[in-house]
Image 1 (tube, helix red, strand yellow):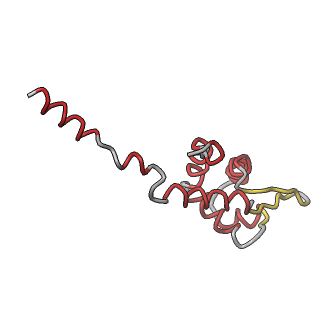
Image 2: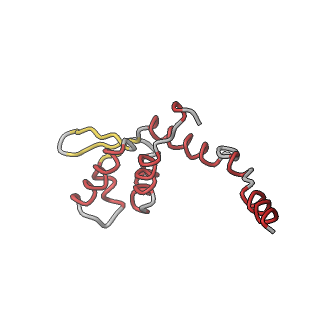
Length: 119
């Protein structure tokens, strides 16, 4: 794996952790339909506005969601570029052969040879 292709595992672990929360995942699903006002998101959940603000800040800080203020409410949308990057990275992580050299390990063969030589 060259330096250009290195994956920022810590970054993606944070993103996956955020996306592993069912409420946040539903918010991402809702935003996949387009920009939404915080008031519309609140209508779907039994949470307070400060709780929603915290969840949205976490997602905004990771770049998953973009926010803009309109009047007294925040408008939220997905950052498609970031999510496309996440999608590509997940695909890359699932591609067989990324660590093909490890699959061709001959450790047991070497140990067996050493054992046979010592017998």
